[in-house]
Image 1 (tube, rainbow, N blue to C red):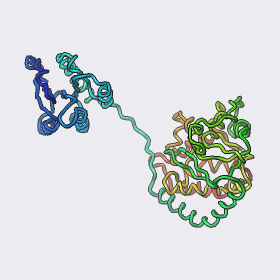
Image 2 (spheres, one colour; image 1 turned 90 degrees about the vertical axis):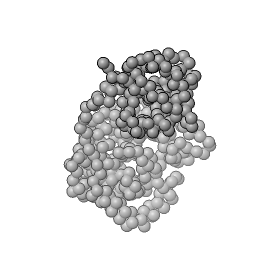
Image 3 (cartoon, rainbow, N blue to C red; image 1 turned 180 degrees about the vertical axis):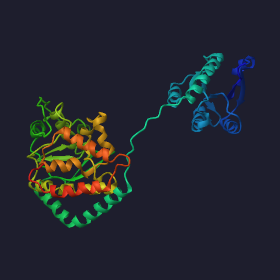
Image 4 (spheres, rainbow, N blue to C red; image 1 turned 30 degrees about the vertical axis):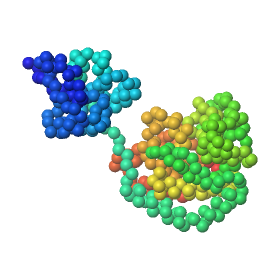
Length: 399
């Protein structure tokens, strides 16, 4: 003989389920409110199913469901919500919270609810005992030694370089219009605000469009681009006058937001290359060329290091529009390592005078991610990369 199903009913209409009195397979325990229900569940054997009215004294059935859901021992118990009249908002909220079923008593036969309980009871039991296969995942962690080293180096360099940095900021301000620093969204192991000294002065909207097409270092195939030069940023056009959707960049007397500038570069490089790298960029100022060649423009990134956004050594953080293109597993693996000021491809790129293919850059990013996996991390490997960075800081080409 099959065991009897014990059903807990919470509400003020137990007479609705009189049919249970004639059903040898079920028994009904009726409780009026959620306080009595929680006390019962805490001190008795869990029931086989719970039927609850939406309208309860002091609260509603979904509040009780939230409490029940937090108790893992009740995960396999079917929970059905009852309402006297259909309400679309309650219906949507109930299934959003993953209530097992929702019934309107005025149009539902109670026997249908009981048949549904029998079905749910069998299936929820099976779901509880089902074990999902486990997969072994690579572990990537920030070693304590690396974090301590990052904080020590970043704070020390900022302290020593602060007088010289003030002179550079003044020179940038005097040479060209605009803020002396630049903030953009970058992606490492997370998305963050990336700080850099401003080194560019662009010439015109038309030049912006042509540069990515004609001077992209990673471009291997030329294709026609959409003319966006004379179009206004659609995001900025929705904002009050004088406000921009992202940090502003100055094109001599013209102003363009960072978002629309990057959209134009993407359009120019679409279907050509994931990475956009302008070689011998004519927009770079005289001060900008100096701080780029000496990597002084990178100094504000030490603030990112102190904040924990970046490390001294890691994979270069990418602009959001470039990161979104790296969707394949073999490409996105690079993000499992921390973002860094210097690293493998930065050292190799500068050592080669800026000549590096997109494939080689991806390979080097993944190589460092492998080095950072599990117990493979070596503090001395990072030190070697830093030592290799020093002679590469002074270079002839602007890359």
